[in-house]
Length: 423
Image 1 (cartoon, rainbow, N blue to C red):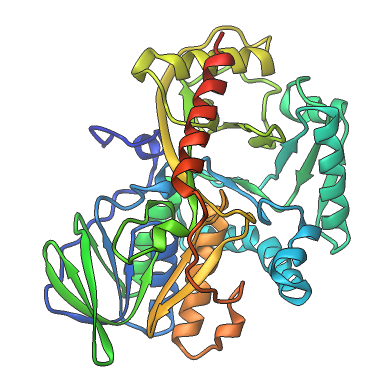
Image 2 (spheres, rainbow, N blue to C red):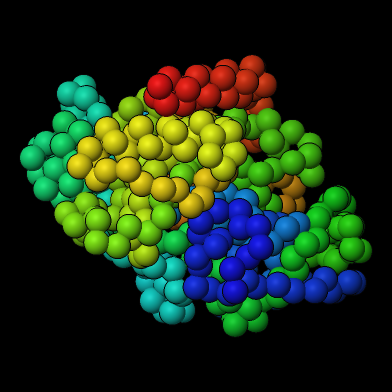
């Protein structure tokens, strides 16, 4: 059954059914995960598989935040070129992090296969497309960084890219064979189903309003009552609120919108037939992908403007006409946006806010692999692994300078870009 008011195309078309659950008033758990997205559900799944009692608290529905609004590109790495990561986190940590992130797409697809998650999974690669000659040179450098560690990537010229995606709008691209595409809402619901199958429990429609330390456990206060946990993981990422003072000030948020065409059967010959997802090197990037129902989904930084037939859909029509001029006019079914948490150095964080309280945060647009990775890593920590085994070192909470001004500037700049590209 289709949801009445879907938050995204993925919500409307996911084969996995919504996972709901009642609040277990007064219960105690080894780990309580706040947030029913990739991070919280991966934490619950991996913790339960290790024998811990785990509970997930979601204020709305599973996947309501960034997880269900994601583009659905399962990419390796971080925002930075691989050879630049060491300059931020150190040589040893940087090398280990890039290696781990390089393996994470395979791990995501392994989880999908193991738990038979119905999420339109296709591990056929993704292409980072050069919007300009300068963009191609940045991709050349990325390719050198990945090849230095043996990653299966190919640097493509403009003709190669045109052959693979059906567009001559780009100056080349970087094909990453490790990557792929999914329906992200299908994936996150599948994680919820798998977590529950492993013994974890889930509450939906329950907002956490307070955390209080009580001896060797945390009192988790909600609008529905109270539970306790030996450990708590805040998996709210870009949707972090005032629950823990100062946490949301450690990153800036940008919005990312997407517009989906109606199904286009018979019209997509030669267009994203094998590689189903791309994104470009422009400062205000564009993403384009194809789903299992022969829709095209195009997106960029910013919020949906103008409702059902407004500015964002005019933007989408103009961008598709530029990238795929032979496609012809199309109608659009859905438009939505979500939030991305960004840090100044484009590297995510993990905070140990207090004894037994953890927060991996600010994934910089890599939510699928990073959220899954942190859930697994934290389950290891909660069952005895050393903190040094985390993908990045634990850091203190540090506010971003001029955060409100930066967020306001980004919103204005992205809205202006959307207007200009709609003309």
